[in-house]
Image (cartoon, rainbow over all chains, first blue to last red; front, side, top):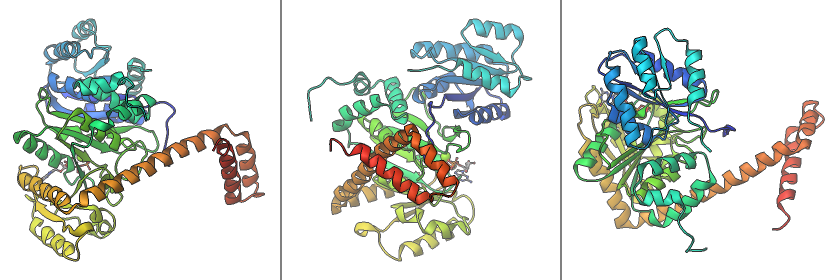
Length: 138
Length: 325
Ligand SMILES: Nc1nc2c(ncn2[C@@H]2O[C@H](COP(=O)(O)OP(=O)(O)OP(=O)(O)O)[C@@H](O)[C@H]2O)c(=O)[nH]1
Ligand SMILES: [Mg+2]
């Protein structure tokens, strides 16, 4: 049976910039978004901002989710935002999760990240937020 | 057939090598959007130049890793590469995790590569409904080679042979009993077998078994499938795999089998498109038909059997389509 959803699925890129080798959190989020009916392009570990932005463009995603534990977020996330702008793709919303101090989270929001989740955030909240901020198209 | 109408903007974007335009057009094709149909119509005369290679095989045998190896080999010999990697959609939630990119390492500034992940969105056969059109868009964009990775569900992953000019079936040394089920289906579409994970014990034995199987008789047009052992993880055997693919392509050209094979593929595509159109029309017609529910009630009460009810509905659908024909 060909399942024809009335609305096309949201496509979301989940990537893990930085050098730390743990992607459990990113995988748990990927699975939760899948279970919510989204198509999750999982790019994996140690992605550079350049790789993330190129993947987002090729995959034509409606949303980018970044996960980080290494503490390098203030170096890597602004770079992602700059590259998105440079590639004329800053209409793709970005959210992030991981160990990010509150003051950094505020600065990242000012840079244009749509949401920043701390370690204890429930999956329900992440899914609902993701759905809310995903780019809608005609 | 008119030749003169201006090119749709999306098609112009592809011709201008705008990667974002290509990506958006792929999305439209996946959504079966009419905008994609008009762009594909405009771009069709520009297609037919890419070499399309299918990479199929059971779950986890290393299809993506082999594609990664081919990608780097092809770039090193100056060929540009598009990749379409298909993964399954959950029939329950409609969602999916597309994980093939994890294995594909590449220089993000290299414009000679374009990678796209696709969910099969419920289509059986190992690819998505739109996969062929996506390969065609990559072809029109100008990639020399397009590599298509199938879902990896095993025996049923055979539709890629309707898309690719060469189909590679990837296997691993110890498939055990699964080999028996693969002999029907998957094995029959192999132009090249790749025994991957040759760094593990048993690869030579597996290759020998395959050689015996292949010696039982040549395939269509007299081609005898090539067998290559490789270790995608260690980068072994990839140039040899590309040579084997090339040997099959030369066979297609030298024997004239290519024209025949392409005609068969186009016939399969036309049939699939007509089926899709009719199916869409029928299901949307039925959804709107108030008599469907009433008929369903009668079937549930066992006053009418399902086949008779279906025949009644089918004749109504045909009746609706008849005028004007
Ligand atoms: N030992 C060994 N492992 C390999 C080799 N190639 C791939 N693998 C491993 O096999 C696993 C699956 O590899 P993939 O390339 O993702 O396989 P796949 O067929 O694309 O998987 P699906 O798309 O999920 O069906 C990974 O853990 C790889 O590291 C190889 O040559 N040798
Ligand atoms: Mg794979």
